[in-house]
Length: 237
Image 1 (cartoon, rainbow, N blue to C red):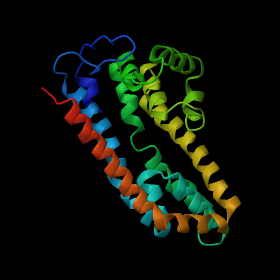
Image 2 (cartoon, rainbow, N blue to C red):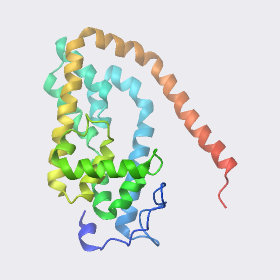
Image 3 (cartoon, rainbow, N blue to C red):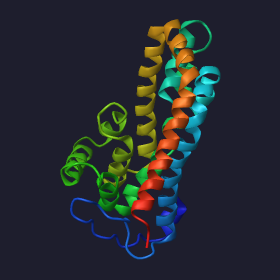
């Protein structure tokens, strides 16, 4: 994060009406811009490449899955195992925290550095992006810390809330603490759901895990195939 304090932000490119900017800076961008964009891209790749591991881990190593991805299914499973005497409800909640907030600070940094262009980039392909931007900024401006704490419950992506927090001037330490509190509330609800379901939740997870690997592989193949087809239809250059 030291790069942000020593290098001034690149002049942002004005957002295209209704679509958001192709890149949230003008010119070639500075090192901090490229680091943020690289981390955002890596966050998506991280969850994609770990997806095939989900069925095996949720059935046999739910703690590892919760730590790695903040998996809701893993946390529910851990809550259910705690109910059946094979784990701890505290572990069920805390294990999911690192994976849940793993990349949130990156989106806060994007909002801090790129301002409105970061929000436009996040919402550019949504319906009525300008209206959604105004709504997010209004919620962030009015409620600030409350919006971050309730971010995992309200129907706004946490990445968008993180960008809005950075844009609004919230400091990183305050954001991280509030984000962790919000994540713990969400994880507590998930673990409580598993506790309430008990053994039935464990049985469901084990049954689903037998088939979900094949579904996951099929989904990844579909995504890759669709991307290849789109590239063929619209070749670069």
